[in-house]
Image (cartoon, rainbow, N blue to C red):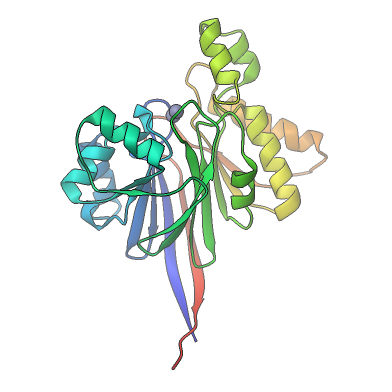
Length: 277
Ligand SMILES: [Zn+2]
Ligand SMILES: [Zn+2]
């Protein structure tokens, strides 16, 4: 029996309607969740963190909207890195783009190994072909990621058990959206179960999750520039845990910034490997 230790680092490279990308590194293994930045920017940001683009195990795609896939096809082609997503996501993306790239289909709610990581897709509810969030784990570390979803599905909530880091959408303040400048049809779409998650929904989920599973780190993600601010999102979180009777925040909650690299999470994970000899 041997014990393996991995240095884990998770980098939020961008989060919001102008681009989304999360880099997960464990020792010499790495992957991206979403590639909503251009290839040049992605290449630069990976290299700045010591990751060779061609060494990525894969790019996990939540869905085919441009802010999540902008650089995916050209990056996959240039560096021969597989795009990993549901059949609906990959088909829509590759048809839209009209080009080919290495791709691996992952069933909605299915599991797959990517480099040294175990990856599980968990259903989200959004106006896309077949959208998912992800649980990415290595050793005793797990990250769960869901943005662009009107609700958090039972499958995603279940995937979050035991995770150390939750990156969950906190798109808008409901009041600011309702009384803001968007046309009624857009407001209705955002508020629907196939739209985006509000500060209230994200914070209620975090409060319920920490009540059941204990403290976690949480990144409030995919904030709207029109209908939210980092201050509002964090303010709502504080309001909720104060109302719930806590003396201090029961989770380490931070906000992912929209258009530049922001949050970094570091940890060591341990995994025990059984050997026959
Ligand atoms: Zn998005
Ligand atoms: Zn979307």
